[in-house]
Image (cartoon, rainbow over all chains, first blue to last red; front, side):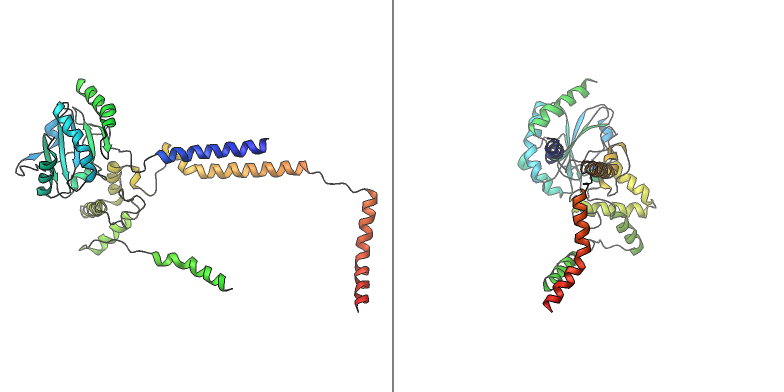
Length: 175
Length: 163
């Protein structure tokens, strides 16, 4: 009997590992930035390039930092959620137009609506590297001390927004 | 023979799939060489099975530019690797560091080899004890001896007959 049970058990263990492996997302690389201070930068604003923005301006506030681009199709998917979030006035959303032409970014916002309190443009993608961006859209939740509390790689879904982001935002705002 | 030769040719096919590095033009060829050398050890995050040196993804180009600029600033390889790891995690390294979370990765195969070897030795020992050497009865022994003695002669005889 053992002759059959043992290989079967071994097979089941291997199958279990493979099954779990199938459901993992290889694109989700755990970010070492979570729990660390948001990297500093100073970038020109998209709409008024003469003005600049830096994350230090946000000290004392909980805010979302959303990296998007006009060439990014997945951004269109998550955009209505940010529009809704901005309407509900839960958290200020700051955008970064990543590796994009200024006019394209502006046109995209005119077409899809602008949920952002402010948008900066990272034309060369240097700040993106500092933030470990590798797949737009990416969204960072930054707390009052300027520490990154959460990083969402890829589009935000209603589920992620309701179950992860909003509870965390409320918690951080209460602190 | 022809088939074997064809097989050999087939085995050589991958040689043709070699693709050159995606190089950016740089003024300083020595620095460029050093940059490519480092980038070969780093993984491109967009196309995860390509190195930073061989990837044509835009992010890889930006990262190569970043590495090049940091080299120009006089940073050494380790400092640049540390910078990238602090941004993108251990994932950028093709050679993962030994850590608690990577112990299985480093020692798992050896553990499996040991377990496999152990099972093999155990099974072989068990089989040995299960199959006792069959003792020959006196009659069988005699018959065997007889056969052994007989064989050459009987062979010779049959040869003679044929001749």
